[in-house]
Length: 264
Image (tube, rainbow, N blue to C red; front, top):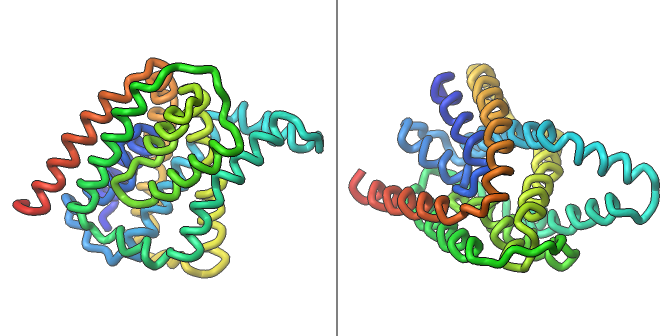
């Protein structure tokens, strides 16, 4: 992969990780357009590296929240921080199960099948459309909500299903406050990504070819910087409840992707 292409894909990842338009789906579309013919395993590796970059940008943006959670846990009490952490753990269970038992099947979806990505973007559009019509509440994420949102996160591992879109939409449709839903959505993925990276490094599954290290580093940096900007921007957008615009965007891009798969 060329360095320039890696930077472009990094910017795409950074911007679309927090916007409800499917970062993995846009990465697959970007790789198809740029002519990246990596085998699924190599393609998934680059995708994981970029997701790690945006996980770090999430930590930076929510650094006060992260510090409060960590400080609260070290009080060794059943406080609000402990409850929030338990909800994060519960939300991780479905995705962890998919990663452990269906990893090979999941990797096969990252081989540039933009027709599949297009249809999944249409699913994302439908989710956002209905979520935008949910009533505003002050409800927090409950333990049951956390597990259901976790199922949405697991399904969103498919390219084209927006992780933030699916998790925020699920939370909102369950009656959770939009701002609280966005905060939970952004923070719940951080330990999952870091855990995935740690697992692959310890097991030796991540193999960095020497000629690709610089390109991956450039993509990582681009995703991190773009992620900082997009995360900050998205927090403001969610407060204004404008998910319909993203639904329209996903609908248009999904239809274009499907058409491109037939005639491109």
